[in-house]
Image (cartoon, rainbow, N blue to C red; front, top):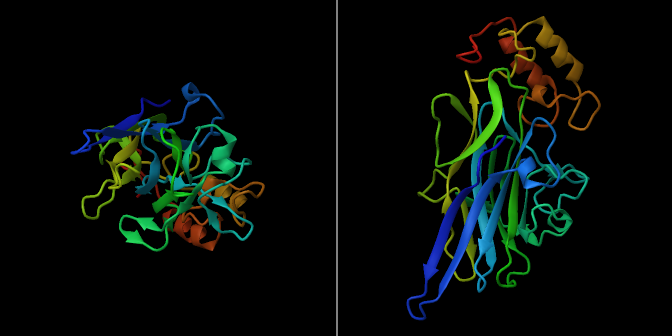
Length: 291
C-alpha cells in the first residue's frame, strides 16, 4: 500500500516577455490504484513523471540515491551481462531504467524510450554508477529537441526487498532525507555534493536542473536482519538450510532466492556464504537488528 505522490514545482518567469513555463515533477510508488501491470511480491517500483507546460519540453534529468535495510536496486541486463539503462524490453517491466516522457504503462517506454545515459549526475562523471546499493545517473532525450507539452514517465526505480521479519509493506515517499521513529528507510535520494537536489530535471525553457530529495519509508518495529530467513530471531540451522538451497545459483536460475545474495552481484556464492557464516549461531533482538 502506498500513499500519494511526492511533487516538486519548478517555474521560470521570463523577465522580458513575462512568459511562464513550468514542470511538475512527481515520484510515486506504483500500486493497484495506478492501474497497469503490478510488480510481484518483494519488488517496489517508484516512477518519476513530469508534467510540462504547453510551450516547453523535457530535455534531461539526473538521480542519485542509495538503498538501506537490505533493499537492492534491480536492473535489466543484455546478452553480455551488462546493465541496460534504456529500453529494457517487455519481458520484465519491473527494472530500473530511463526514458524521455512516455505513458507510464505504454510499451513504447520499455522498447523505444528515446533517451540515453549521460554519465553520472551527482557528482558528475563520465560513467553512471549502477550498483545494487547505489545509483548515480544522468540521462537526456534523443533527439535533443522535442515536441512542446509532452508529459509522461521519465524514470523507473525498481527495488528488490528481502522477506522482512520486522517490517511491513506500507511504503511511503516523503520529501527530504528522513528516518522518523517507527519507520525505516529503504531508499534515499540524496546528492550529498554541493547542495544539489538528488532528483533533478531540466527543460528547453529552464536548462538549469532543479528538483528535490526524497526517502522511501516502510513501517516496522525493528531494523531487519537479512540473514534470518525463518524469523526466529536467530541465525541457525534453519536459515543455513535455506541459504544452501540457493547456493550456487544466480538471478533467473531455478531455486534462486534473491535474499541470499547479500553483496548484490546477482549470484549466491562464496562471498555471500562468508557473510552468512560470520553471523551463524547468533541470536538478536528484533528491536535492534542483526548482532
